[in-house]
Image (cartoon, rainbow, N blue to C red; front, side, top):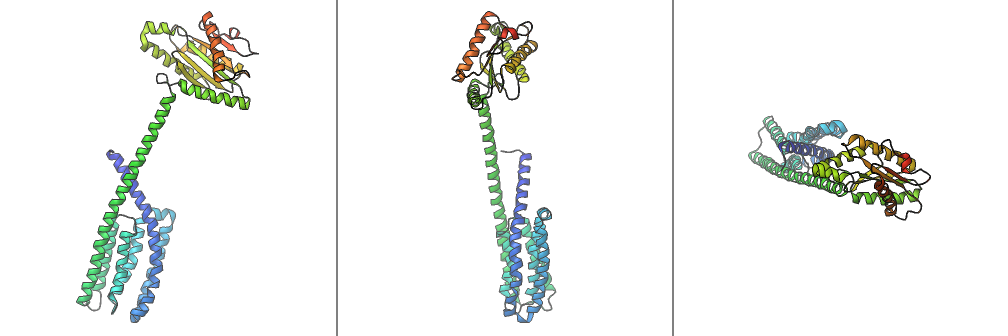
Length: 384
């Protein structure tokens, strides 16, 4: 179900689509009328030769007006904005012209009545527009015929009047009911398409959310281990192909178990979220920060050599000490890609081994692997 605001927006969208379709189908119907109207003069010469001259003048005048209206409908901006009244006028012109001919016809009334009713049928079964416009065309046809009959020099025969009423009534009823039915079908089809589109958008959002959740740590919002492994493998292969540098930082929160023991898991979770936010604010946009498990965080730095990675490690080390609570510090191990690293695991193992060694000696420390840079002890920040 959709709310009232969404329903109103849906109806506006449907009306806009109908208006666009009205212009397109109106251009087609107008082209048919503009071609058929002058050709009908041949029929006048055969069946109503005494009135053929008068009818030709009516047809030519209608043709000129119709071409003007059709040209306005063809205009991109004006035609789109005024499509419905222009199409209505385009259909009304031959109806009015033929209504004036009907009261002058002597022998072939039915063919002219057929031509008189064709725009009504066309408005219902050829055009795509609102049923109210078909009703307006029916009213114009009835009004034009009434004026023509009242202004005729002599009243029509009863038989002709009954035939005319039958043709007009039949065309009016069929066209009105047909257009109402078609409009309902069009609305149902549009609503179904809109519902399908909404469902597709919802499914796309859910898929994107599932993809995000499958690659994101729920607690910290960092990339999870699965995403880390994918990106590390991809970046390592790319670095080997391009010869670019690649650095990995492994970070451990010192004495995190003590934080959990003293403040509970809620306090520990808050510290992890705070540290994650702090790290994200310091890394480059191309770096990837991931929670690898527990209090262990990895930072993947594509294109970073030893100097850049060590500088970032120092910055992260100091940032965590500044933004976290008392007693929360960070030990960082840094390793850069070497020719002897056969796999991502080998690169991680070197960084993890050095980090573990340094952490056993002293928490709140840095360890950097990769000659010719000096080891972390020489790059350790103040108070480390």
